[in-house]
Image (cartoon, helix red, strand yellow):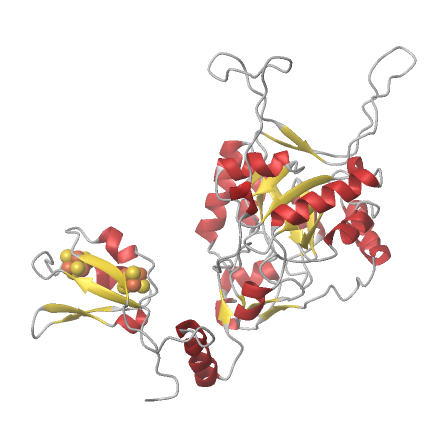
Length: 403
Ligand code: SF4
Ligand code: SF4
C-alpha cells in the first residue's frame, strides 16, 4: 500500500435504473468525481474525490444519486482510531501541517443545549407578538452609566457612535478571496435588506460594494490587506481582528493561486503572491499598543465609527476583555472554539479554545464586577446555530451575535 493511500470516506452510489446520463453531476461536481464513459455510455465515479457536499445529489433530476459513509473499517483500537490513522497517512503523504476548514467537528459539550430559558409572567408580563409590537432593535457601542439632562431638562445626546441593527444578529466575517465576489455581494444585499450588518473579513472591500457601506463592518487584521482611508470610511464600523475562535493565536494564509484580478487589486497585493496574515499584529504587543490602533482608526474616521476588537475565546479571555474595555474600543467580539474558518491547522481547530458560552459568561461578569461593562457592547460568535442560541446568548449577557 502506498504511504498516502487512504480509503475514501464516502461512496457515491448511483442507481443505474434511474440514471438518464444527463451528465449534470459531471458538470456540477467541483472535484470532478463523476465521469461519462462515451464508449459504454455510462457514468462512473471516483469515490476518493468526493467530499460529500451533496451538490450532485440535490441537482440530479432523477434522484439517482446518494452519498453514503463508507463502512470500511480499521482494526478497533481506542487509542489509534481510524481517524488518527488516516491523519497520520495524510501527514506522511503530504509532509505538511494538516489543514481543515469549517468549524470544530468534535463531540464537545454545547452548553447552549443544556440551558433552559426563563419566561416573563404576572409582574413582568410577556408580550403577545401577534398583537403587540415587539422591539428587537439593538444599538451597539459604548453606553453612558446614567441618563443626563441639561438645565432645561432635555436629554443630553452626546453619545459615542453606535451601530443600529433591526435584530441582534450580524453576519460573521468572510473575506473577499476566501469567498467569491458574488457571495460577498449576496451578504451585503441580504444585510441591507434585513437592516443588519455583514463583515468584510480581512480581504478589503471591492469598490462595487461601497454602496452597502451603512451595512458593512470593515475589518483590519494583521495582514492589513486592502486597508486605506477610503475603505475605513466606507463602513459603518471598523473591526480590529486580534484573534479567531477556530485558530486562536494563529494567522491566516490565502494561497497565491487565489490572488488574481480584482482580489489582488482589492487586497493591494501582487497577483499570485500568498496572502499571509501574521499570527500577531506586529505593532500590538500590549493593551497600550492596541489603544494606539483603536485611536488611529478613530482619527482616520473622524470619531464617527465605533471600533470593534475581535478576540478568540481562550483561558484568560476575561482579563483580555477587561483591557479592551479600557482601550477606547466600543465593542468586543468574542469568537468561541466552534467558530468557522476557511483554513486552520486541524490540531488547533479541534483542540484549542473555549466554548463561547463559558467565555461570554466570564467576560460579562468580570466587566460588571469592574464597573466597565457599559464601556463596550459584547458580540459573540462561534457556531450560533438557531434562534434559540441567539436568545440564550443574549440571556448570558451578549448584546448581539455573529451568525
Ligand atoms: S445527474 Fe443523475 S441522472 Fe444525470 S448523469 Fe448524474 S446520476 Fe445520472
Ligand atoms: S457530493 Fe459533492 S464532491 Fe461528492 S460527487 Fe457529489 S458534487 Fe462531487
